[in-house]
Length: 234
Image (cartoon, rainbow, N blue to C red; front, side, top):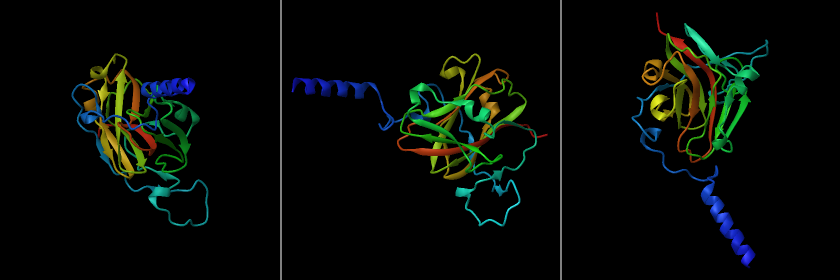
Protein backbone atom coordinates (compact mmCIF):
# COMPACT_ATOMS: atom_id res chain seq x y z
CA UNK A 1 0.00 0.00 0.00
CA UNK A 2 2.91 2.39 0.82
CA UNK A 3 4.39 1.73 -2.65
CA UNK A 4 1.14 2.64 -4.43
CA UNK A 5 0.77 5.81 -2.29
CA UNK A 6 4.28 7.00 -3.25
CA UNK A 7 3.51 6.33 -6.95
CA UNK A 8 0.28 8.39 -6.80
CA UNK A 9 2.11 11.33 -5.16
CA UNK A 10 4.86 11.22 -7.81
CA UNK A 11 2.28 11.18 -10.61
CA UNK A 12 0.46 14.17 -9.16
CA UNK A 13 3.70 16.17 -8.95
CA UNK A 14 4.56 15.31 -12.56
CA UNK A 15 1.15 16.56 -13.74
CA UNK A 16 1.75 19.87 -11.97
CA UNK A 17 5.17 20.35 -13.63
CA UNK A 18 4.42 19.32 -17.22
CA UNK A 19 1.37 20.81 -18.98
CA UNK A 20 0.21 18.39 -21.64
CA UNK A 21 -1.50 19.18 -24.94
CA UNK A 22 -4.81 17.91 -23.58
CA UNK A 23 -4.77 20.38 -20.69
CA UNK A 24 -6.89 23.51 -21.16
CA UNK A 25 -4.54 26.54 -21.15
CA UNK A 26 -4.89 29.52 -18.88
CA UNK A 27 -6.77 32.44 -20.45
CA UNK A 28 -4.43 34.47 -22.68
CA UNK A 29 -3.85 38.12 -21.77
CA UNK A 30 -5.92 40.74 -23.57
CA UNK A 31 -4.68 41.26 -27.10
CA UNK A 32 -2.93 37.90 -27.12
CA UNK A 33 0.27 39.27 -25.55
CA UNK A 34 1.79 39.20 -22.08
CA UNK A 35 3.47 42.58 -22.02
CA UNK A 36 3.70 45.90 -23.80
CA UNK A 37 1.12 47.61 -25.95
CA UNK A 38 -0.47 45.51 -28.72
CA UNK A 39 0.21 46.36 -32.33
CA UNK A 40 -2.90 47.41 -34.31
CA UNK A 41 -4.80 44.46 -35.73
CA UNK A 42 -3.65 43.23 -39.10
CA UNK A 43 -6.12 42.93 -41.95
CA UNK A 44 -7.73 39.54 -42.54
CA UNK A 45 -9.96 39.33 -45.58
CA UNK A 46 -11.60 36.48 -47.45
CA UNK A 47 -9.44 35.42 -50.39
CA UNK A 48 -10.77 35.89 -53.95
CA UNK A 49 -12.53 32.89 -55.39
CA UNK A 50 -9.92 30.39 -56.56
CA UNK A 51 -9.83 29.02 -60.08
CA UNK A 52 -9.60 25.23 -60.34
CA UNK A 53 -6.89 23.99 -62.71
CA UNK A 54 -5.63 20.56 -63.71
CA UNK A 55 -1.98 19.71 -64.38
CA UNK A 56 -2.93 17.61 -67.45
CA UNK A 57 -5.97 17.57 -69.75
CA UNK A 58 -8.73 15.50 -68.19
CA UNK A 59 -12.45 14.83 -68.58
CA UNK A 60 -14.73 17.43 -67.08
CA UNK A 61 -14.64 17.05 -63.30
CA UNK A 62 -17.57 17.25 -60.95
CA UNK A 63 -17.97 20.63 -59.28
CA UNK A 64 -16.30 20.76 -55.88
CA UNK A 65 -16.96 23.10 -53.01
CA UNK A 66 -14.10 25.38 -51.86
CA UNK A 67 -13.68 23.15 -48.83
CA UNK A 68 -12.34 20.30 -50.96
CA UNK A 69 -10.57 22.29 -53.66
CA UNK A 70 -7.43 20.41 -54.67
CA UNK A 71 -5.57 22.68 -57.09
CA UNK A 72 -5.95 26.43 -57.21
CA UNK A 73 -4.05 29.51 -58.25
CA UNK A 74 -4.27 32.87 -56.50
CA UNK A 75 -4.71 35.97 -58.67
CA UNK A 76 -1.34 37.45 -59.61
CA UNK A 77 -0.26 40.57 -57.72
CA UNK A 78 2.12 43.06 -59.31
CA UNK A 79 5.48 43.29 -57.56
CA UNK A 80 5.05 40.10 -55.53
CA UNK A 81 8.06 38.32 -54.01
CA UNK A 82 7.14 34.73 -53.19
CA UNK A 83 8.64 33.47 -49.94
CA UNK A 84 6.97 30.05 -49.58
CA UNK A 85 4.38 28.08 -51.54
CA UNK A 86 5.42 24.61 -50.29
CA UNK A 87 5.93 23.15 -53.76
CA UNK A 88 9.42 21.98 -52.72
CA UNK A 89 10.62 19.97 -49.76
CA UNK A 90 12.97 22.85 -48.87
CA UNK A 91 9.96 25.14 -48.39
CA UNK A 92 8.36 22.60 -46.05
CA UNK A 93 11.50 21.82 -44.02
CA UNK A 94 12.17 25.54 -43.52
CA UNK A 95 9.33 25.70 -40.98
CA UNK A 96 10.04 24.31 -37.52
CA UNK A 97 8.24 23.69 -34.23
CA UNK A 98 9.86 24.66 -30.94
CA UNK A 99 10.50 21.90 -28.41
CA UNK A 100 8.16 23.54 -25.88
CA UNK A 101 5.16 22.94 -28.16
CA UNK A 102 6.38 19.92 -30.15
CA UNK A 103 3.65 17.67 -28.76
CA UNK A 104 0.95 20.19 -29.67
CA UNK A 105 1.79 21.05 -33.30
CA UNK A 106 1.72 18.83 -36.39
CA UNK A 107 3.05 20.00 -39.78
CA UNK A 108 2.54 18.12 -43.04
CA UNK A 109 2.27 18.71 -46.79
CA UNK A 110 -1.26 18.73 -48.21
CA UNK A 111 -2.80 18.83 -51.68
CA UNK A 112 -5.87 20.59 -50.28
CA UNK A 113 -6.65 24.31 -50.35
CA UNK A 114 -3.53 25.30 -52.30
CA UNK A 115 -3.59 28.84 -53.71
CA UNK A 116 -0.15 28.78 -55.37
CA UNK A 117 0.75 25.56 -57.17
CA UNK A 118 -0.54 22.20 -56.01
CA UNK A 119 0.46 22.00 -52.34
CA UNK A 120 -0.15 23.78 -49.04
CA UNK A 121 1.25 23.34 -45.54
CA UNK A 122 -1.19 21.79 -43.09
CA UNK A 123 -0.76 22.97 -39.50
CA UNK A 124 -2.70 21.19 -36.76
CA UNK A 125 -2.72 22.87 -33.34
CA UNK A 126 -3.72 21.15 -30.12
CA UNK A 127 -4.49 22.71 -26.72
CA UNK A 128 -1.63 24.89 -25.53
CA UNK A 129 -1.06 28.53 -24.64
CA UNK A 130 1.09 29.44 -27.68
CA UNK A 131 1.22 26.65 -30.33
CA UNK A 132 2.56 27.44 -33.80
CA UNK A 133 5.52 27.30 -36.18
CA UNK A 134 8.47 29.49 -37.18
CA UNK A 135 11.19 29.86 -39.80
CA UNK A 136 14.66 31.38 -39.98
CA UNK A 137 15.02 30.81 -43.72
CA UNK A 138 13.70 34.11 -45.00
CA UNK A 139 15.36 37.03 -46.82
CA UNK A 140 16.78 39.65 -44.49
CA UNK A 141 15.72 42.69 -46.52
CA UNK A 142 11.97 43.37 -46.63
CA UNK A 143 12.33 47.09 -47.32
CA UNK A 144 10.52 48.52 -50.34
CA UNK A 145 7.52 46.25 -49.76
CA UNK A 146 4.10 47.30 -48.53
CA UNK A 147 2.61 44.12 -47.05
CA UNK A 148 3.36 40.63 -45.87
CA UNK A 149 0.54 38.37 -47.06
CA UNK A 150 -0.38 34.71 -46.83
CA UNK A 151 -3.45 32.63 -47.61
CA UNK A 152 -4.98 30.41 -44.94
CA UNK A 153 -7.91 28.01 -45.00
CA UNK A 154 -9.33 27.38 -41.51
CA UNK A 155 -11.56 24.44 -40.60
CA UNK A 156 -13.40 26.69 -38.13
CA UNK A 157 -13.50 30.32 -37.04
CA UNK A 158 -10.39 30.94 -34.95
CA UNK A 159 -7.44 33.28 -34.48
CA UNK A 160 -3.87 33.58 -35.77
CA UNK A 161 -1.01 35.85 -34.76
CA UNK A 162 2.28 36.76 -36.44
CA UNK A 163 5.61 37.59 -34.82
CA UNK A 164 8.63 38.94 -36.72
CA UNK A 165 12.13 39.37 -35.23
CA UNK A 166 15.20 41.15 -36.58
CA UNK A 167 18.85 40.55 -35.71
CA UNK A 168 18.60 42.95 -32.77
CA UNK A 169 15.45 41.47 -31.22
CA UNK A 170 15.98 40.40 -27.62
CA UNK A 171 12.48 40.47 -26.13
CA UNK A 172 8.89 41.46 -26.59
CA UNK A 173 9.47 45.19 -27.03
CA UNK A 174 12.17 44.69 -29.68
CA UNK A 175 10.15 42.55 -32.10
CA UNK A 176 6.89 42.86 -34.03
CA UNK A 177 3.93 41.18 -32.32
CA UNK A 178 0.52 41.24 -33.96
CA UNK A 179 -2.67 40.93 -31.96
CA UNK A 180 -4.67 37.71 -32.06
CA UNK A 181 -6.61 38.36 -35.26
CA UNK A 182 -9.83 36.63 -36.24
CA UNK A 183 -9.73 34.15 -39.13
CA UNK A 184 -13.06 33.05 -40.56
CA UNK A 185 -14.01 29.49 -41.39
CA UNK A 186 -12.90 28.77 -44.97
CA UNK A 187 -10.46 30.70 -47.17
CA UNK A 188 -8.81 33.90 -45.92
CA UNK A 189 -5.92 36.17 -46.86
CA UNK A 190 -3.94 37.70 -44.01
CA UNK A 191 -2.30 41.05 -44.87
CA UNK A 192 0.16 42.69 -42.48
CA UNK A 193 1.22 46.28 -43.26
CA UNK A 194 5.00 46.44 -43.11
CA UNK A 195 4.74 50.05 -41.95
CA UNK A 196 3.49 48.62 -38.62
CA UNK A 197 6.27 46.04 -38.56
CA UNK A 198 8.87 48.76 -39.16
CA UNK A 199 7.80 50.53 -35.96
CA UNK A 200 9.43 47.71 -33.97
CA UNK A 201 12.16 46.18 -36.16
CA UNK A 202 14.59 47.02 -38.97
CA UNK A 203 13.09 45.78 -42.25
CA UNK A 204 16.61 45.34 -43.66
CA UNK A 205 17.62 42.94 -40.87
CA UNK A 206 14.71 40.48 -40.64
CA UNK A 207 15.73 37.24 -38.92
CA UNK A 208 12.65 35.09 -38.18
CA UNK A 209 8.89 34.80 -38.59
CA UNK A 210 6.31 32.99 -36.45
CA UNK A 211 2.70 32.01 -37.23
CA UNK A 212 0.79 30.81 -34.18
CA UNK A 213 -2.42 30.90 -32.19
CA UNK A 214 -3.00 31.77 -28.55
CA UNK A 215 -4.97 30.07 -25.80
CA UNK A 216 -5.94 27.07 -27.94
CA UNK A 217 -8.51 24.90 -26.15
CA UNK A 218 -9.40 22.41 -28.91
CA UNK A 219 -7.89 21.09 -32.11
CA UNK A 220 -7.50 23.69 -34.89
CA UNK A 221 -6.56 22.92 -38.50
CA UNK A 222 -5.06 25.47 -40.91
CA UNK A 223 -3.87 25.12 -44.52
CA UNK A 224 -1.28 27.83 -45.20
CA UNK A 225 0.03 28.81 -48.64
CA UNK A 226 1.47 31.57 -50.82
CA UNK A 227 3.45 33.46 -48.17
CA UNK A 228 4.65 36.56 -49.98
CA UNK A 229 5.87 40.14 -49.86
CA UNK A 230 3.90 42.66 -51.92
CA UNK A 231 5.49 45.88 -53.17
CA UNK A 232 3.92 49.31 -52.93
CA UNK A 233 1.44 50.09 -55.67
CA UNK A 234 2.97 52.24 -58.39
